[in-house]
Image (cartoon, rainbow, N blue to C red; front, side, top):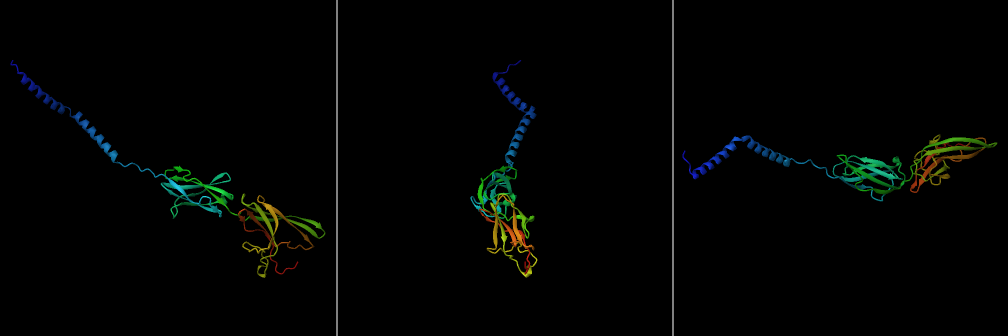
Amino acid sequence: MRRLSRSTQLAGLVLCGAVLAACGSASSPSASGGTASATLNVAASAGASAGTPASPTPDATVASWASPKANATVKTYRVKLSATATGSVARIDYVVISSGKSRAACVARRPDAADNWTCTADLLKLGVVPGKVTFSFDATDAAGAVTSPPDGTRTVTYAVPPPAPSGATYKLVRETMTGPYSKLIEYRATWVEPAGYATKFRVFGMIPCPRYSDANNGQPCVVSGTKIPSGAVKVIATLDGTKRSTVISWREEGELPGPGPYSAYLVRASNQYGSSTYTILWSATVCWQCVY
């Protein structure tokens, strides 16, 4: 056998290596193709993730008081509570704190025309007594998260007079003979008033009959809306603000009973902020040109 020179052997090895490299590449297409495919898939996936916008995050709720002003004086039973708000606000719940008690005041479920979240609390119905009153509010966003309280509290002076007494009654208690032609007449007057509003009650007797006229004959001397002339009434009893009744009495002389010493009995509630209107406990009827 003919021996090849060393240079010829080396050339053959180089050629063989090149062929093997080519053959090796061609003989394993699935492995090579799978790697490329996997690489492309990863790149595509990464590209899709980078290109998809993230879900929007709701804006943080920011709310502040609009009314009432701090240290304001409130002179009505109904008070407007209002706040400005930004962010994803769904409702604002107002709370009133009085005499150590906290209670729901009112709820604003949408902004008003001025873009404020406003509602009205009836402090009389809520049983809030006159004096220092504190308000607070919670803001709830669309996701149900509550910010409490976002702008602290507001303290005001609730400076209102008592409401007029209501539900008045006037009933005979007894008649006691005190002599052959005299007797003591006693009636009990009662009324209704919310607790904590009145510091005192005054019961009045009205001397004249302000509606005394032929046109009003047989009708009450005093009706709702009757103007009470100055000096027309006399205080016959002063009671503590916790009282809700009193006995009114007078002595009748003679055989024929008259209408009593007064044409009407009235009651009025008062506190440090003022007095209510009069409430009629009882009224005589107009007896035009009657003689007793």
